Length: 275
Ligand code: KMH
Ligand code: ZN
Image 1 (cartoon, rainbow, N blue to C red):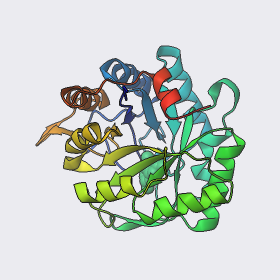
Image 2: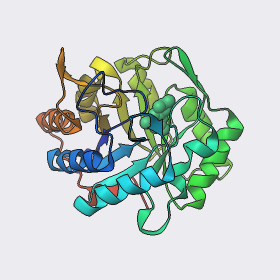
Image 3: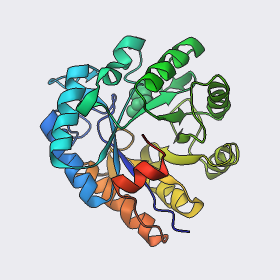
Image 4: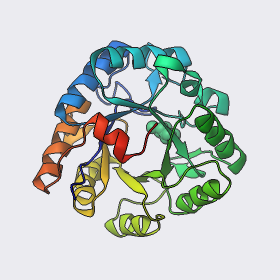
């Protein structure tokens, strides 16, 4: 049976700066332009954070609205909003993208199911906060992408399902290689895949130099891949990607070389069981 790969472009993030790469999109128009090129290169979805005009991380609803409108004016790529934001944000701040309804409603939203060290900082997700965000995602009629930075987060997602806050089969994103958290190792990926409930789907987002090699692993193991400037700014050693689209193009090339086709946004919607 054919199993097209869903490529997600994590385009902006909260940590990457213009000092690190001049190719980071910041304004709605820059994000939309890169999103169009990501779609052409083979991505079916964008994972979206937004920034203030001076480049600071934000989860402001109006900035999300502007970016989503600019993207949808030009492409059919699916939009997954971040509810992680940047470390230190309040829950209401993090959930700015979940206040958008009607034509501006996102297609999906992330949900991290546990606390994790995040470089020198802590990405704080205590259980009541996770449940608060899960409820907001559910109330908006969206499916979460369950961001798992460690294996215990899969178990917590199962608990959320038992509590009726997450519908199974669910979609998971294994974020590997964040300093202080689970490293990007094939054995770790295999264990995470083997820990999933029957019928689940998964994406792997490996950080830094691991990003593109993990696209190969995702391709052969039947999963999906996330690439983009949020997690990695280089297309090869020491060479900056000229935009998210260049990382998507490289991921698409690798997926095809392993015999995978690429999901269109419409196919991704079905594969990930989105409303
Ligand atoms: N920026 C990280 C602290 C998400 O988007 O849901 C959290 C993050 C996860 O990026
Ligand atoms: Zn993110």
